[in-house]
Image (cartoon, rainbow, N blue to C red; front, top):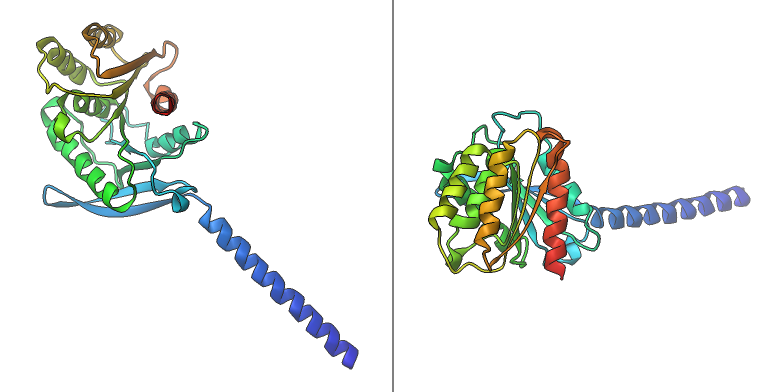
Length: 262
């Protein structure tokens, strides 16, 4: 009987230690995993919901740069619905760099137009202010988008007030023709705030876009030779809109962070 009691006690001790070890392992694993949180913020008196990707390194490092994805329901290309995940994938492809990825929780069903640029821009400006207060002390911010949303990103590069600028880096893929024409007009008229500094732009387009118009826009930016702008372009000659944007997002993120780290 004593032997049986001793065996039972021994097994109980082993199981208890094993359970404690499992708890410790689980806790450690949880603290080292990435996660996505949702949050609410105010923009011009309206309460909006956002979501943010926090990498595994975040609990130990609150000084991470943020990438802001402007993502609407693209009226002409409704198949590309995983942009948030593709931006996160792009960050993971840059070794030695972590970043927060931020966007609206839901995808608004709007088609961005040059006339409504300020309305869309204000949402992300206010979102960035909230993220700065709650999530990070890092002032490096990247604005990224495709299609009509890419036009908003590109317009922000030129239209932002230098004294109150939000974004440093701009990743644009397949901007809509309406926005491309609007930006060309701004450049030709030299009609935007001056005294900008240290901006970076990654511009790409696919076979689905107007090649002549995109190259005209690229030439206008290149010929202007802005001293405040670092600029890289890629033309994807064998890939359409839907298949290009995941690749172009990763290429743009790599360019931005490679340049920042030099």
